[in-house]
Image (cartoon, one colour):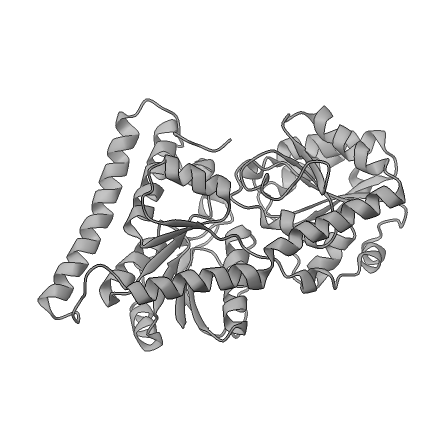
Length: 429
């Protein structure tokens, strides 16, 4: 099968969507399928990439670490035509996502959309952020989903939200899997040695894009409080983003700079070693659809302390592979950290074993095969209307319909946002 992945973010960008696209791409190729990825240009992209088409983009949009895609270059169309995809997989409803829908309609092949992100949680990157804007992006992503042939939800929490938002397109839960083999290869002891982390230290860790929507200000407060009361505790931070500087300043203000260990962005196999150097993984985000890093932590045998939120509650089982907290308070988090720190070696070993066992249920091969099975059914079923070549009347009308549907989706979303009095209906909590 020839699969066309279209995404606004891809390696070397750090984030859940980029890592998901990369993971599925690698898995599909290992299973014998061909995958082409269409993604924006980024700084430090690999010198040689197989079946990856890069298109121009504005980097670091409005102070974020996201990119904004510029007008689609002509070479994309020729590359897609030469690739001859069987199916299009869109990973965003905006920018390249719109192009994905147009291309699928143009060549009359099915399109699947993964609703990776709760977009209303990211409107602070856009000038004029407001309740109206949040309603607009909710409505627009819902309408986009209903223009596609199938929708993947990364977790059951998100699938439920989409149904409440009246997505009528068929939905399947297809999380991003984790490579158990890769996560088992790490060397936590060696990583601690390289980083200068004491062998006897109790390491609280975090991996991810460092950005405001990840609730890092609260997490920092909780970690700083715990480090003040536990002299052998330290914080291992893996990642990069706009919240890095405020976080570092908080540690400086608390006089704890010597117990903050920052690595920047890491890739496997070093990333697996970073996970294994941790005693617990701390996570306070409420904007996740799956929380890939949580599953990775579990695969490395690291228990998680996290807020009870969508994409998190599917991974963390309170008391079995960590703590799932209902109360967003510093005391709740520090108490959970303390619970883990005071465990006996036997208790901690049992927790680690359970974490690995739960992660095994979401392996890369399992989730990739599920996605491929859905693709195959979609290709066999085909699309609702046949299209001739671009010069035929049917082809032209089909493309006009695609543009009209996108335009009506934009207009409908704007109308719904302006006339509704509710704030971000059905935003997951």
